[in-house]
Amino acid sequence: MRWLASELHTHTFHSDGRQTLRKLASGAAKLGFDCIALTDHNTMSGLGDSELIERETGVVIIPGMEWTTFYGHMVTIGLQDFVDWRKTGQSEIHEGISMVHGRGGLAGMAHPFRIGSPVCTGCYWEYEIKDWNDLDYIEVWSGTFASVKPENRRAFALWTDRLNAGIRIAATSGRDWHEQANTDEPLSVTYLGLDDEPGTISQKAVRALAQGRVSVTVGPLVTMEAEAAGALYGIGESVTVQNGADLIQLHVKIDFSVRQTLWELPKQDFTLKITGISGTLAQCAAGFADQLYGFSIPAYGLIWARAELWGVVKGVRTMVAFTNAIYFEPVATE
Amino acid sequence: MLLNVSGQLAPIDSKRHITHQFRLDKPAAAIQIRFAYGPKLLEDDGQAKELIMISIGSYIAPEQQSPVREGWRRYLPLKNLLTLSIDDPDGYRGACHRHDAEQNLFLSEQEASDGLLSGKLALGEWSVTISVHSVVTEHCSYELSIWTEEADTA
Ligand SMILES: [Zn+2]
Ligand SMILES: [Zn+2]
Image (tube, rainbow over all chains, first blue to last red; front, top):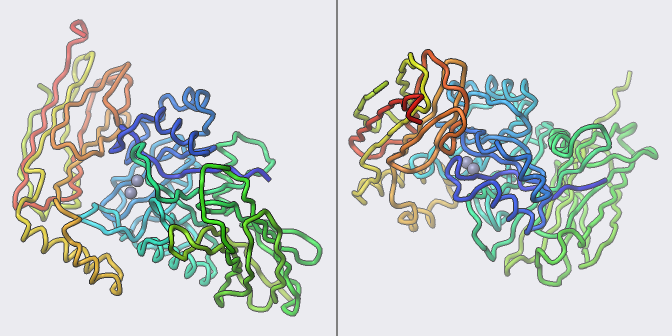
């Protein structure tokens, strides 16, 4: 499977960014991104020359818009048409989300725990969510060196909590990239796993996010497959468990070759963890080289599992990478 | 002049949209918009501190609050934020979500200011929506003027 290195949250002069789309896309290309989503605040006018810029830079540009409202910022991507962000009240976000879905778009919470108004207007999510199944994703890592920021740890915990409640929802990173400025801080990459179905790369990327085929990292790409009753299931897929007494085999791959030379981590032994509803299900040391790791996990009580890579980044012990979840459901018995 | 209005806002107007309508009756080469509001900044640090502390209380996790309270000055200055969006008789023509307290914008068939969509200037009912994201000063006044450029002078 091809994993597309993506940056899903960006701005240009068409809202409050300080860059043209051309500058943004060529900056993304230099950083090894294959794909960006343009998510200007409340406008899609910046997409006018996106096809030309895609050809010039080789970077796929997913159309999008960040709903920049009084009650939250919601990133919407994959839709060509404008959906009105002004009419949705604090208890009406589901109407807004269905309009986005109706136009073929996905909706995600942007930086849900960033400090809100008046410091950062509407930045903290205050829309009432009645059904979490409606939202497609949560931007759990916002900004640079995201994993250590308290508001991102809250967003990550919110995601875990939703998974524990049985909700199937994806998790992404987003730099909320406003200008071409150099930084020493680690950059997150959202990898989207492309399928072999028909469509443009942009459409496949949106489909990958819709289906939870997502892995996030500041360095190596971590992917995972589950093996049950001889069949293999990828990230985002659902495994039907025949028997609670079964063991699920998880195969985790760490690939250090991605975006080579464009990220740097100190040579070290990482910790590779498998996490599920009861916390850490298994863990082992992982070296600084491409390798496959296998885990046997009892199926009993398992509803989701993800892989997490932990290590030291800029002197801080923190998460380096995480996959989205593989889901498990017991087969209905008569 | 198609529209020339001014208004006075107060903190209670935060999180409100204000829509001004205007009619385009004659074909035009361009629509020009000038929007300005002020003051932009809350200059009184005492008042700003009070608002920042409320935000910290509402939005920062309890266990993180004390270090964030200590560093409250990093959120200065607090700003008023009003943004514009435009609708023509057929639908949305974009938004200008940025912090400039004075914006001179235009729309024409071929070109438009960043944030707005170029395209036909259809005759009929247009509107400009001022989205009051935040007013932190006691008063905030705005002015909005809209006029056209004649088709033959463009
Ligand atoms: Zn935002
Ligand atoms: Zn943003």
